[in-house]
Image 1 (cartoon, rainbow, N blue to C red):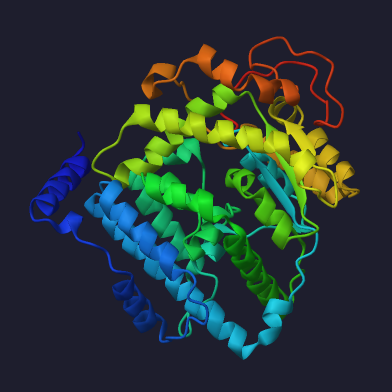
Image 2: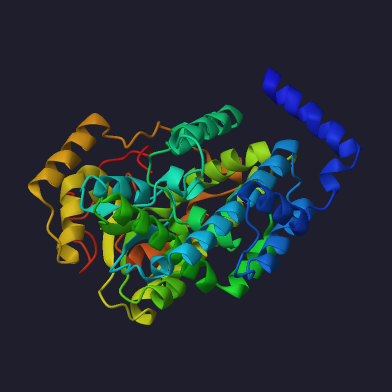
Length: 433
């Protein structure tokens, strides 16, 4: 055990002994802290309060929070509340913000660790596209006084987290200027699966599944309107929104409800490879925030969660009634020929990839062909999973989308309308997530 781990373990033991970690976190206390720091007190819409109280109670009662976890939960919550106050104040000053059109946004989703992040970053090589960046989702508005140090502050925060979770960067390289997943935006409403990934809170997940995601995506659109309005004021091109999050598969109806003209991209990969990787990532993310971690439970929960996600993708084409057909991308195609894959996405939506964007994308792949991910070896027994059992569970999904087991010979035949079909050779790797 490292010195840092020993110190944190001792702090947890002392805090637990004196009952500090069992004390309720009261939403009213956090609201007061946010109002004081923001210098504002009008939230306009307080529909977030019940979800916030549910989240706080679940974290205290179920997540076995560590000292770091309790501090992180409080810090995150106050930050989200401050951002809500700032967004509301900006809208009162400039009502036109919420009239900003968000037209034909592209949503990239699929099983986690399937290549969604890699595809997203490749598409962002095109200057005509834009995505919410990490620093923007943490601090959407600059401070009222003094220099704008938001990027530097978020860089420091990421480094602090990486000291607590040194494996994280190899599993999911993230910088202040990286495109950020949409679950960070929806977390402002306390209706986000980001919370369920960070903490073990089964009652909250059950509630969220039943309550649905429409309010979260209504806020998601509002958040993008704020970023777009700031770009317009700064004189920078708005660009086409390209958004990414595996959790979108659980909110497809909400996306269609809020964004009538949304375009969807599903990325498909052998689920057996996905499950081991996502279970490991969840374990790494949760470890600093809890006093009790059960890798076997994590493995089984992730298997059940993403089997549901796979079923939702199978149901999507028949049930969503989107304005445009879903674009399907295969992981093996993506890592074999990234440029051809991106071009196929553009063709699917009637877009043209410019020569400049193609050149930038080529340079990006040349500089970082593995997407920045370190190779990892995963073992099924570490998370209580069995390859044969999991393969059988996901068989319908694999057949439906023509997904080959990684490492098996790749057939030349690709099902209609699925993926670019560019790959003709097998590339077996696990680092491009």
